[in-house]
Image 1 (cartoon, helix red, strand yellow):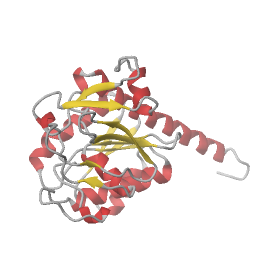
Image 2 (spheres, one colour):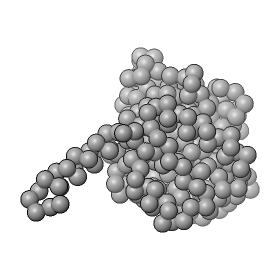
Image 3 (spheres, one colour):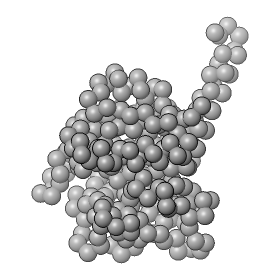
Length: 261
């Protein structure tokens, strides 16, 4: 059985963005071996909880919205976009379930920011001028990121042959964002950054037994022609498969206990 991956609709009001972006996430998950489960923007809490119960992983996609600065006790920057209460609610419920059950989590762009804030981290609301962090909307390469050599992210990319050998692990990315993590959230660590200006570009879980990865770039857009993009989705879906197998074993062990049925 394919692992079921919960994906909240990226935005509750920008339907043209959803129509353009959502199929890319669905396609990448399917190609990597997963089954997307779309969480509608107008889903009730009960409906989200029921869907999450039957999913093996959570993918938090990008969005044209910005996380409400009040969530991380910051004053709103003039360039901070309006928040999306429906998307925020879906993310928070899915993250709560995923952390409670140790399900794999993959956050992309806004999804990383949502994850970081939910874990009590903060955001830089407007990135410094110079490096074109938003250029990935129109080009395949916006800038480069440097990757922490001992990170899970580096291991994923190395194993897929998507990184050159050596101590300087640098790769091009298609970022298209104007905000990024500032202080990493609880249980998250910085694992990639832009070497030109230090902007934080990826975080991952500090727990060895929990797959949690967030990247500021958009691997769903370059999935078909980029080995690194495919490696990220493959690692995430593979983690969901492993999570489902562990759950099945636990259920079998429980049912085998005398007196249990």
